[in-house]
Amino acid sequence: MGATVFIVDDDRAVRAAMSLLVECCGWETRAYASAREFLDAYSPGEPGCLLLDLEMRGMSGLEAQEWLGKCEIPLPVIVVTAHDDDALALRAREAGALAVLGKPFRDDELVNWIERAVGPAR
Image (cartoon, rainbow, N blue to C red):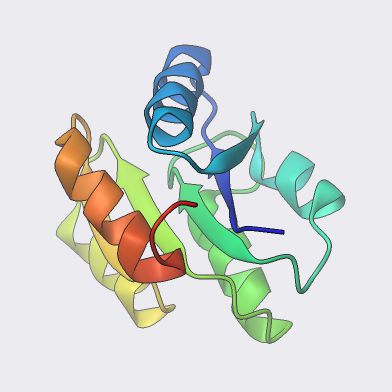
């Protein structure tokens, strides 16, 4: 089984656009409207990476990322955020994010980071 790209964003249109892009490149996706929904569904050890929005209602993306780290779940995280907040981006990197991409992001940049995280699509 190949890697899955898990997409967590509270904006339905953003989830749909990222899912379409990632699937067109050949990866499987699973999309979630909240960090809690993702954490409830994710089975540790599933191969893949996480595209994670930071600013969401309820549990923030940063809180989810920190939870994964505390539980020693080595899921690569690529943060995608519409908020230009250097302090928040730094906290995400310190928590282990591979990259912090601003919305709107370039498609090729996101695909490049996914390839770094999980390897080329099959």
